[in-house]
Image (cartoon, helix red, strand yellow):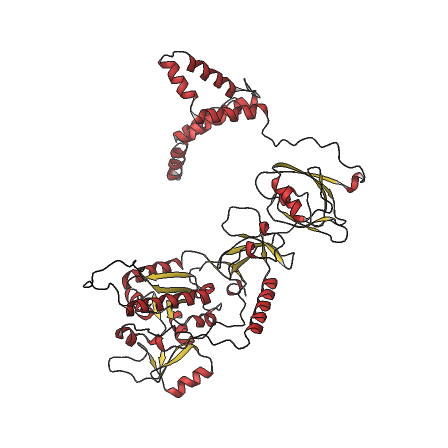
Length: 566
């Protein structure tokens, strides 16, 4: 077997190794695979490039010029001021391309080794009234980003104290500024007795490097530890509208159902958090759960004092038909279901969540449909099940009405006596129940469990308030809000006295009732919704629903931590 010398290149080694791969009856496939891999031209090219780079590295190459970009400018100027032939014209075009000129600028930057941030020399006029060990000079380099720290002023001494360090900001990344440090100067400007907003303005206007004179805290705080707590926001927040926040610029705005990574809970009033998916590394301030609950309690108390006997808000009957078709009235049992107001004692702040992905063999998640007027959830879920009865099923409701001739026990309904129904109600066996035309209807927990026990995805439609009773580790509900598509109103146009109206007042009233119903559900129960389905027609809605159902086995979802932690 030939022996390689020390000067042999990688591509030579590769070629020699390929030649030594002789066929072997026991490892024929493996040898063939290796031969194909080693024979790839792209791999050979990479090896040659590697050798060239190592060759120049051993020679310790130095740049021929430190100002190639300037030389190119001179050449371009010469070519532009004199008549040129075809070769010179081509050279001029080549040297004028932005990519080549940018590459030469980078070359000069590396050649001159001036790519590191340039910090100005320390000023000579720093005060000498402190011991060397008690004063710390911190020099930070930042661009347009905030410094990432908030400050407060001690009302008694006038000292300016670092109140908090924002995770991921310039101050945090430096590791040189800590909570409790006393700030004495910013870029040579004394800040003692200055208001925090004045100092913030100085910091905001400083670009490039910032020099801080700091007296370290007596006991410096340890750098913040990773918390890795994720919260689903159950309300919308805009720091610019919050008078209580210590620094509006440091606040983090978010919308309801945004997932927030809480990176610090050291401050019991103001947490530091990032929005999951954001590219911004710096954390922002958000009100803590405890503080937000206190604010809501206070607002509720003030509201009760101002309105000691508020008028009871009419629900308009979320399950009422509102002049929908007679056929829908007859088919929609849900019209008789009871509707409750959102629990007034519930404070919607944050919900701790974690990523969850359903594993093979694990019980399927319960799929809960809620809808506004005109959604006709029953026919939608029945169509999905009819198209794939092996994978999907519906919870058969209970009723006290008499069975019709075409109906079968346990198919359309579970027919029970009124006494039996009321006993089950008292024993909390129903997710929801209600009365319609003097008959009782309800969806039982056992009906849901019976479908899930068959390894099927159970589809159930309930009033929105009932969703809260299903949000348990057993069911892990995936809530889909279905609302019919309401076309936008056309602008009124001038019509002749004989022309017909496009829509009647009755139709307009029905559409407005649907819009009001959808808005009410989104306002009161939007924090419980996982997906929204806009129903244009039955078939398109069915296709949308099946797409959502297919995601349950493939994608991961943010769910309450209580659902996955024992």
